[in-house]
Image (cartoon, rainbow, N blue to C red; front, side, top):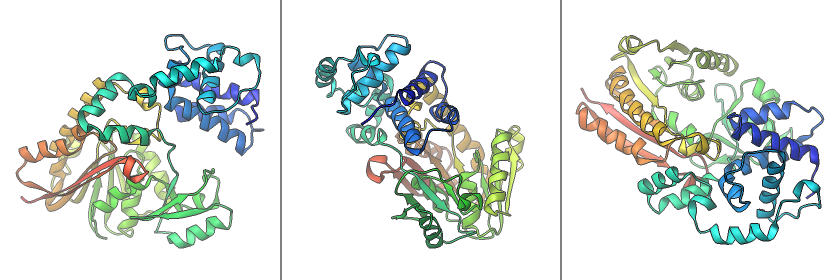
Length: 402
């Protein structure tokens, strides 16, 4: 591998921005990649891949380099980058920037530490303890899977094009995709590329959405003509899928507590050719109460720890805290208790998270059912990253009996 100093500097700037300035990894990278129009696709891939990999293995890298307690500066950043390359088996050039990279020490330290899960897979102590306490030996498989690079999956917008036609159209531009077993509208991108500049994206033929996430809308079992409410809609990814599954018939109502997310959902809906989607800002309890007993289907894609999507957001494990997880559990139960009244008698709701912790998933459903005898569980489904190769998700479909 041939190194270029300007690319290493870009990686270092990204790492500094993420860990010292508190920026989200995707935002830090976006800013840096925009700063130089001369970088080609390979250059950009080098910067992005090395940044994300170093974020994933941040604790391991700092520990074997024996720089755990040092503040980040230019010298340390080069040492940490070099350490990561040594761990990958890459030969370093004889540069002044790598003068503090001691390959023998790195290999010795790694040999001593590689059996410690929280070091080898780079986890904060509290998160490793929590994951193992809830998942037992399964946690070993999940942390390994969550450190893999996230695949790019497209959701075909069937309001505008078929899956076969989109695959053919992209292939003509050298973009190769493959179908995903068990996910009818999904296409897996064979090689990571910038798809947002393609005519197909601008025409609304697809959205980028993980395969596991796509299962949620299908799990709702809606039929065209129904009134469907997506009560934690965010920027509308699942709302758009619901609209496509409804064939633009009936009504999809997207709710959220932040107006800018709903504005983004409306913008995406226009591009996708969605005509049955409305948005409404949640301004307080009254917004929800006005909707009681009005929905045939209700989607509660609730706020969660996001542990199931760490391969996509690797910096999240360094920003999360046990206090946040405890707080979000309370919020999940509160949403279930209050928002469930939106669904009509005979209607169905789906409770969903992008977490793999039982305390955010099945245990929340069990607690809700113990306090709400007028609901019953129809089906629950867990998607684990170690088994699917995609994001971790949980979904439970409940029927309101009375």
